[in-house]
Image 1 (tube, helix red, strand yellow):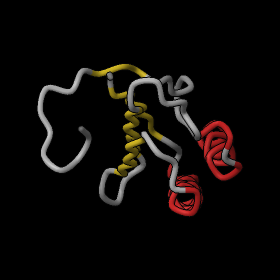
Image 2 (cartoon, one colour):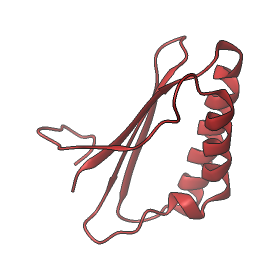
Image 3 (tube, helix red, strand yellow):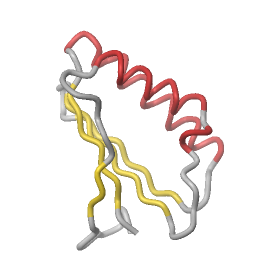
Image 4 (cartoon, one colour):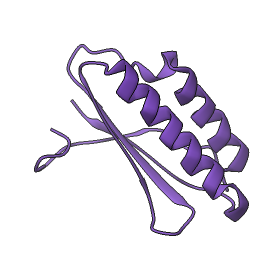
Length: 101
């Protein structure tokens, strides 16, 4: 299964709000503990660039659209993104160690 990657940059004044929304989304993911999902969200250290990686098991449905905090994260990103709206892009996993698999 490919890994979906979303990469974007936000305005300086929105970076903390986006980071807080990411933390809230992950709190909900941790609370619901959905099966068949591997999810990573990164921020360039001290910066305004964010990268999300999502991998779903074969046949697993993406639970994120059904989570309120994940929808709020998406709305927060849309409010602060610099440039075009981020779109998920598929990547092929060539190697991994204790991460996405």
